[in-house]
Every structure is written in C-alpha cells, then in structure tokens.
Image (cartoon, rainbow, N blue to C red; front, side, top):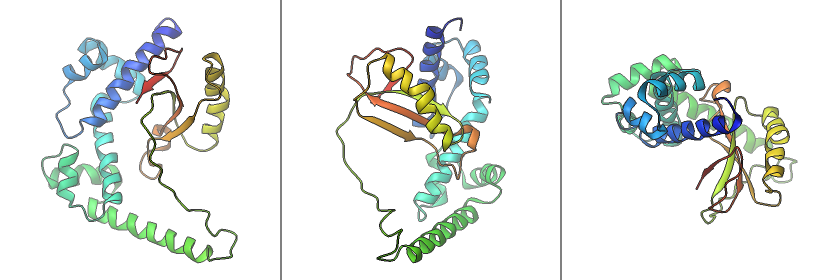
Length: 224
C-alpha cells in the first residue's frame, strides 16, 4: 500500500469481507471464499487480514459470532439458546456454551439473566427519577422513523465511543466532506457495536453522508 489510493482500495475490499462475514455467520466461512470477496490470493488475504485487523481471521470470526449471539440473547430474552447458537454457526448448545463462557465468563443463560436484571434495574431507576414534572421527564423518549433507502458514503472509526467520535468528525470527516462537496447533505452516525459487549478498542462507528448512486469521492466507502 504505497499511496493513499491503494490504501483506500484495500480498505474498501476489507470492509466488503467484514460485511460478508456478518451476513453469513451461520455458514462455514472458508478462506478461499473470503479471499475471493476481497479479490486477493488466499495467502495474501490471510496475511493482510491479520495485519489490518490486529487479529487472525479465525479469532475475528469467532469474536463476531459470540458478540452477535450476546446481542440476540439480550434483545430476545425468550429466544431458546439453541436457536441463538445455530443462528451464528454453532451446531450444538454445548459447543456454544463453552465458547460463550470462554468469552464472557459465564454460561449464556446466566449471562443473559444478569444482563436483563441490570437493564430492568436501570429502567426502574430512570422511571423513578423521571416522574412527570421532573427535569429528566421525557428525555429518553425514542421515536422510530421509517426512511426511504439511500446510498451513503462513509468513513469508519474503530475505537472507543465518546469524545473520540467528536474528534473523528472534526479531524477526519469534516475535511473529507469539504473535499468532496458534501456539506448540506443528510448525515448519519452509525454505531455498529454494543459497548457493553464489544471491547472499547474494537468498537466500530460509521460517519455517513447521503450521496448519489454514482458518487466516486476520495477515501470513502459506500453502502445502501
């Protein structure tokens, strides 16, 4: 990767691979298939992936499977553990339980029960402190809005959420938007991981801007 254009191209290819992995967690993810998605030789892809991600392909895939499983356990507390295990590529609850405990320190059902209790306790505390007329009343109201499909270009930040995200917008995204004439376009901040599940240094965040379908700016990645 001798110049920025090569780096942008390599990054775009790797992002396609990461998306493919997330879309096929319930399947066997073979090296030759993922190398073909990236349009690299198997040998070059395997070395590049480890250097790029800071973890081997096997470690990354295992981590993503378990993180997605944890998200589903919390989001759907009545979903049987076997269904969760099969949805991310495990053939049995026993194998899933062993891998899950190695990652999160407890069995899936025990971990889920603890997460649900913590969530209910936080909700109870908020409800008590947000009674009608209190300063916090209504602050956590959530509205779900259906939006038409749109093509966006994005830059990705990997690391802790919080101030780092504000710095990312100012130091990286704003200059990129100015270079590509994107000021005034709708913008989106997309947090891809749950900080209660994914390690801070692995959290992903996409700073996205709506673009035309044929947009070809410098340094971005696109998705619909």
